Amino acid sequence: MKYLKFFFAFIFLAALYSCLDTEEKIVMNADNSGIYSLKLDLGKVLEMAATMGANSDDGKPGEKKDTVVYLKNLIDSATNLTAEEKSLYRDGTVAINMDEEKNEMKILVSCPFKNTQGLTAVKNNLFAVLKKVKAFEKASGELPKEDDEMG
Image (cartoon, rainbow, N blue to C red; front, side, top):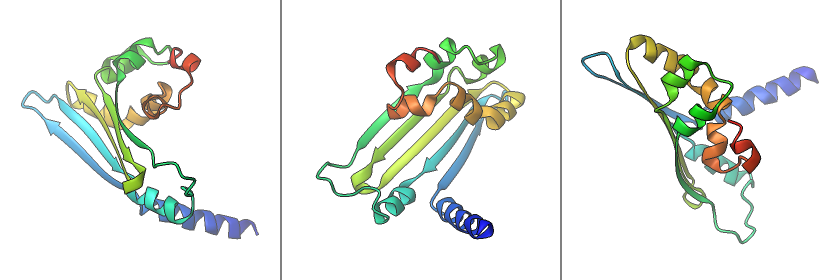
């Protein structure tokens, strides 16, 4: 039974993985500075959720969201980041564009860097820092008011 659960969990994760389109983009300037960005297209995940009945027709229109969160305020008020992390990620952004009726959801995360070492650090730790400052919760509007000030 244990192996059967593992098998179904693996199949489910494989199905979700095939529903996620990613595009990684690095723009390098002559001085080795630039912008790292990662675009996630979750439209297929919304389609799959709709076919599985996750968005049951309860008479409510599908949610629409077009949000950009500038990390500066979250980074500056965060107490759980190092000075280096604050410096690296301060000018980053998280943009979410979602339209449930059209089964569209795109997330664009971008962060400038000053040199190739900064690029390596940004790529390796971007999502850990976003998790620490609760950037996705802030962008989706799921962060309660009192947690919003904690960072």
